[in-house]
Image 1 (spheres, helix red, strand yellow):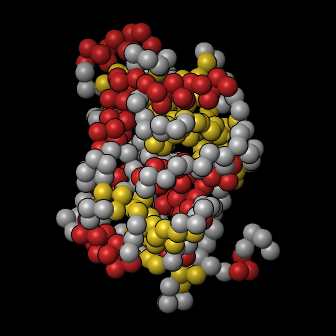
Image 2 (cartoon, helix red, strand yellow; image 1 turned 60 degrees about the vertical axis):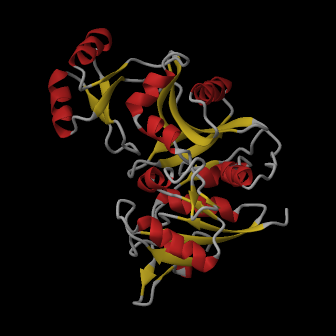
Image 3 (tube, one colour; image 1 turned 135 degrees about the vertical axis):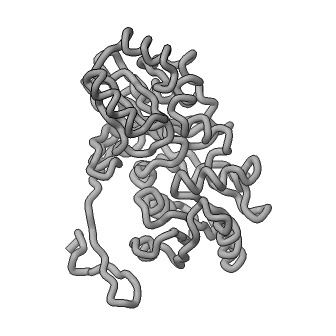
Length: 336
């Protein structure tokens, strides 16, 4: 595979942006990784060939700033690493492109908008996928019906949040009222027990093939997978692929579910790559590389299965700045 690419990854100060760069470093192609973020206090500059501070995605100058960087460095593809940026960039055509001919590697806006909204996503899937009960908290009749049918405990979460920090478990109507006072744009969902564990499942669909890889995972203090290991649970994988088909997925997405006492049940779809994208790439599930291949008209190279079994552990690490940019400290390396 001789083609080389210059790829711009945004939000490299965050866990997803950094995972995207790590996945690209594992590519079978030669890839030059360029990075942006709206904040220069992160460590994203340590992992890319060049780093640039850009405005926030809701700033009118945001898109122009990316175009300027792409022109200067001859960028050939852009991979957004945050949902606010996907929200903006996914609207630049169908499929989305920057500066007319630079593919943006993300879901198109219509699919992204449906599945970023947890209520719309569940409503679309409800005819084809076994789901737990759910309701729009702003629909009094639906909310009353939910409480009568499912009772408590229940889960309340914002319709468009990401990560687990905004999720609340409510045990009674008093706690529900308090939760809704904090965020009245929410969905209520029947509590799903984790008798068989919680899973993050990467799913990928294209004309040539479809595939899934599952990680049984524990969440960490910042709302992302802190510990994970590959799982070959057929019920989990089949359920996730059913979700992918029912959602009319093309490309990559992340299905979060619990294998409950009643079988696998959906928590939510993340309409983007997940922060486990680098761990998936190590296993041979190359959804970022496959997505890029498709955008350039190249045939994705499918790896042999089953995917490699690994255990994944996220950890905190530090970088220092002696007034001339952040740098890692070799003596602190985990390889010492």
